[in-house]
Each structure stands twice: as structure tokens, then as C-alpha cells.
Length: 352
Ligand code: 2P0
Image (cartoon, rainbow, N blue to C red; front, side, top):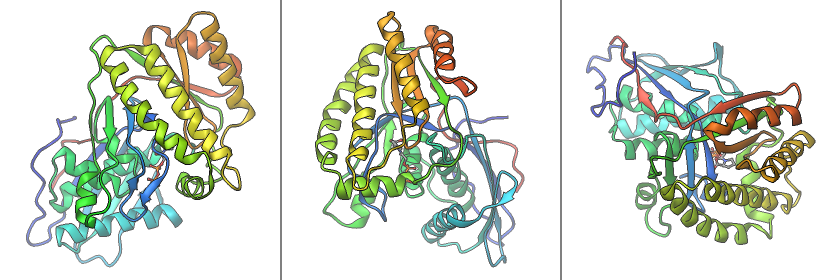
């Protein structure tokens, strides 16, 4: 059974008795993108970003403290986590332990329903769920803003998945202390008009892992792309336009801003040295199908992330028609329809 997000942390028992908590979080898709960091260690982004949390592809993460254990035991979809995934999760747990002043290792089981590494934001739902579960297990503050900041330290986009529906992630301030910078960068909900009823049609044109991680790709883009700074500047205007469009419930304006922001981000990558190209021929076929839908009078707009998959924003009432057009353009590929989804939360039913 699901519960509302708890406000009180689950205190670790003094004698080190095992504490188990489970959290669930959903991925989010940015309508104004996060691309580029100003501080890699603190996960501070160069620009503000704005996203929609989805109602599909949840990640469920269970954290149990293991007093006396020498190592963390990390399981991902039933198999031991290895390599970079293990390093990132263990590093995140170290941060939680440091903040909680509690050294217990943990047993972490993650069940992820997102096709991992395919530009579908699996790290967003993953670190949002881990932040909520680990904060509760280790007794850290569990207000949504604190959880958003904490999730950010696992993966920037995870800061937004703490919240349901629409969220803006503030880039925060630079120049002060680490603590001031850390405190200043978090996500919070964004208001959208009641009548705004969008869907994202997700075309999984390739579910395999991506060739280049978004972390590396954004680093290279910031360091080498002459188009990066112009995009970052225009992204500020995009954010203001996006907030206004959501407030009006104007799907066409939301879509136009999302599409220009995403294609601009991909242009920054294409101009990086060497170029980063995530679009594939199948992606371009879907982009063509969306243009055709618009010519025929259906409001449909694309956004793309660090992978070849295409997400098409449309009215919920048009989603089946848009999905059919996308299937025609990318035969044999999986197509999912998502709506705005819930924020990250703890589940009931864990035993202490
Ligand atoms: C976004 N992406 O705003 C952008 C658009 C991909 C393209 O956030 O290095 O996995 O862990 O902070 O959050 C992907 O970046 O990167 C991402 P890290 P993350 O959704």
C-alpha cells in the first residue's frame, strides 16, 4: 500500500537493529533541459531546468541498514551492481552516512523498470528513490526540499523527480561556500493550469545503453562547443516562456518552447569537438512524423535527451493518434504513453 510522503524520518535504532525502508520514484523528462554543470562535485547545473515527472517506469528501492557489515551490498534488478553504477551508489551512500554521522553499511535493492542508459532518465528515478529511502533509513531530514538537494548529489536530474507533475530545478548561486552553493540548488513544484492535460508519447527507438554517458557528453559540450553559451543564454528565456505557457495551460506554447530548447541542446552537442550525436535515423523519422502531424493540425512537439529516443508532447486526447503516427515512423519499436506522475515517496509496510 502506498502512503503519502512521510515528514518524519525513520530513526535508526540505537543498538543498530536493522531498519528497512522502501521508496518509489518516477523518471522525469525535461521540457527545459539541464545540460552542463558549473560544479561537478556538488552537481550544480549551469542553468535552471524544468521537467514533467512521468506516471510510467517507476524505480523501487529498498534500503536496509546492515550494522557490522564491512561493505554495502547493492543489487540492481536482481543482480549485483557493478562498475560505474556501484561506484555512484556507494559514493552516494557515503555522503548520506557522513551527514547522518552513522557509519553502518547498507543493503540496497533496486528494481528499475526504465530501459537503463537509453536517455530515458533512469538515473533520475533511481537516485530520487535512493535519496528518499536512504534519508529515511539513516534518519536524515526528509522535507521535500532537503530530499531534492540530496537526490541532486546522486544525479542532477533526480532533484526534479522528488516532485510530481511539473518541477523547476534552480541552478543556485555560485561564489560562496560549498554549503551555500549546495543549499541554493534544489527543485520545487511549478504551477500548471488545471485544464492543461498533456501526454508524452515515448518512442523507444533504441533501448540499449548509450555510447557516451550524459555526464561525459555534457562536460565535453561545455568545454568545447561554441554553441554552448548561446544555448545556455537562450535557455533562460525558454524557462520564463515555459513557466508562462504552463500557467496558461497553452499546450502549443509549451511544446514550441520544449522543442526549440531540446533541439538547441542537441545542436550544442553536434558542435562539440569531437561531436556528440545521439540522434539516429529512426529518431529523425519520428521527428518527420511529428512535423507531418502538425501540418495536419495535430499539436505535437518533440523533445529528446541523451539518447536516440524521442518523446512527443501532445494533448492527452490526441495521444493514441500521435502514438499511431510514431509507430508508423518507427516500425517494431516500443511506444509508451505517459502522463504527469507522482513525486517520490516512501511505501508503507516495512518492518524494523
Ligand atoms: C535533463 N539530461 O534535463 C537532461 C537533458 C539529459 C538531457 O539530466 O551527471 O543523468 O548524473 O547529473 O542527471 C541527464 O543527466 O546527469 C539529464 P548527472 P543526469 O533531463
